[in-house]
Length: 481
Image 1 (spheres, one colour):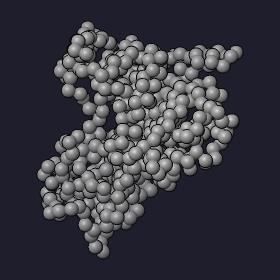
Image 2 (cartoon, one colour):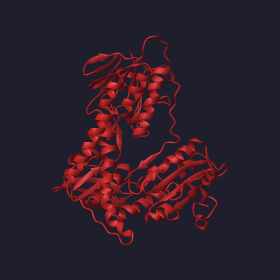
Image 3 (tube, one colour):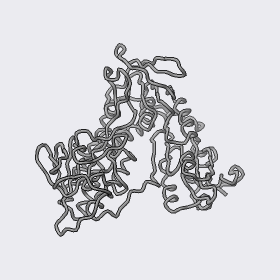
Image 4 (cartoon, helix red, strand yellow):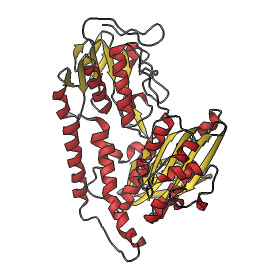
């Protein structure tokens, strides 16, 4: 078949008595989701993987980073046990190589269980390894031509190198290589104050590294400013030095380490450290696929342009996950890939909807968010109201003697409908799904404030935050009154 540019619109369903053949390019979370869904719909699927099977999340992303973040949490909690009178504790790193090896053991176990061992259960999914390249007459995988009816691209993303003069001359870490370090550096400059920079910055600081965190704007810039400011104060309290709102001028080798020159308020300053970690975001893996030869357009950030059906500007080609440059979360990749497969095999009936998409930053306290921020709600024309409650009003955190954090709710002032929730709290990621369900159900702030929550739980803070729209919760009795 030929992949010609469509005259207009997106994909059209095919009426055929033969099985649809689908090629999925990329064998990570999105690729497996697409391949399994297409096979369950009756398609014959060719899944093409290049490199280590399993993609970013299980190999170098979510799984390894979160287990190491949890490991060093003990180093923070031990000395802070003294917040309870009569208790003292200490912890230290005895063998960092053992920590890294333990992480790698989990990675390999999950790669085997969730990817390699899954394939035999789906006989209509045929896995091949090689580099895929789109062509007008099909798809070439290491020179062998395949001619599928539909294609789903799920090649993921990779670390982005920021355009700082001299960066190519400096040995730098990224989120992959940093997690494989068998020896901890004495000091580290982290460039980027987003999710990866904050998570790994805190992890390395707790492990004993002197961390300097730099960013162009402020920490977790997509989050509410109250959360950004509070998180910065907590990270600084742990000894992390933060330079926010700076401009990078150049970077260079300096002895066995690095030297970063930056501008702030019109003046040039210099930072030095043993190593530098680049955490300035990720870029979609689109290079070398031959997209330009088959009429697939890219967005401004380099991702494959797709519509709500997950269809590209070529009517035979879909894309999902990080390669689209949008909603770069593993669960959204799997969700989008499932829709792409359903549409590729079943007539384009499923539309992508991220209105109630949760996100979590695994710092401590965790940042969790869903729905609109205050700024976004205003930009969309809502007349809004907000409530903010600090965790010293939530009994669960008082009992834990750890009141770091806050909860902010955004609601429509005219209808009382909930629009968004933004949480900074220990294990805040466990709280956010309640609001995901609330948003899906169209609940109001009053509905949330009147719902029954179990006492002495963190999620009860959502009830209190909802009541804060029109009450002073400090005047209420236990169980949120």
